Amino acid sequence: MKTRSATRGTPRLRNEKNSAVAQKPAPVNGAKHWSQRRANGIVVIEALPLVRQKWLTHGFSTRAGGASRLVDLYAPSKPAEAVLNLGFSEWDERPRVEQNRRRFQKTLGAETMTLVALSQIHSDIIHVIDALPEQPLQGDALVTATPGLLIAVQTADCIPILLADPEHRLVAAIHAGWRGTLKRIAEKTVGRMRMLFGTRPEKIIAAIGPGIGRCCYEVGPEVAKEFGSQFENAREWFDGPYDALAAGEDPNPLPWLTMMPPGHQPPPPSVQLDLQAANRSILKNAGVAAKNISVSDLCTSCRTDLLFSYRREKTTGRLMAAIGIK
Ligand SMILES: [Zn+2]
Image: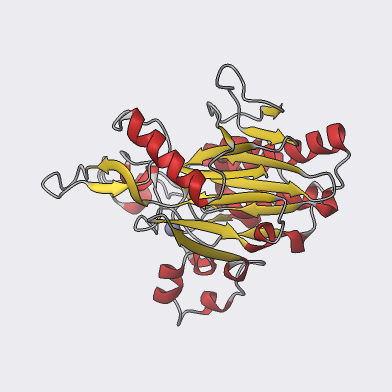
């Protein structure tokens, strides 16, 4: 069942508009908190509550319009697609990625700022920086209070999260896949901001950007179990046979009951996980006000016309979510 997905990406909403589940209200602070801005031949997605903070710049990159040439492995005769790949991927050439990054920075009005990205490892490691590190840092969140640094995370399905503390003029960029989410990286980043800068969580403005949606993100029993063991309200973030999987049961009937010959049993059970909802809940638990959390309704896997999806495409580019103090 893919019931709750009706509240996610627009294509599915359209398909299911007559079903009962589509009546469920849209996610809090959904589409009306977001806009897309076109400049320099590319499109940048912005969270309007962050746009209103004139002391910072931010943006979530999209797919089209870069110097990189992406070949569709399923249709190799098709001409290569011009894409804004912002990660140093194996299939791409470094100068093209650097050119793309310059174009992205220019579009954010941040061409003179120093871009700082991470070597991401699906951890809960947070780096607080006040200068460009000599070596790329390993970790999954960056925090800075230093003007001129544009901190960024890269994704192609995982959830990018940007935070701003307007009182102390402090920003953070977080990469949250299922492992980082399980380790509460967003909550720990808020904790680090509190500890080092005196941030009041209720003042934080948070933007949870485009990532793989509940509609498309199938995970196995081990992920359901892990979330169930870590979060009291985990079941709200799952569709499918979550309760059985979290309890360690196999929801598939025994093969002899289904009369299926060996090798024809149902596929291994899976559930769908809503990483954006999980991170929204984690931020709320950390004290961030619900009204200050904007959640993008774009699913990377549903919207490969606009975004990159590693799960759907395998060979693809990387999106970037960046924020910095002017
Ligand atoms: Zn989707």
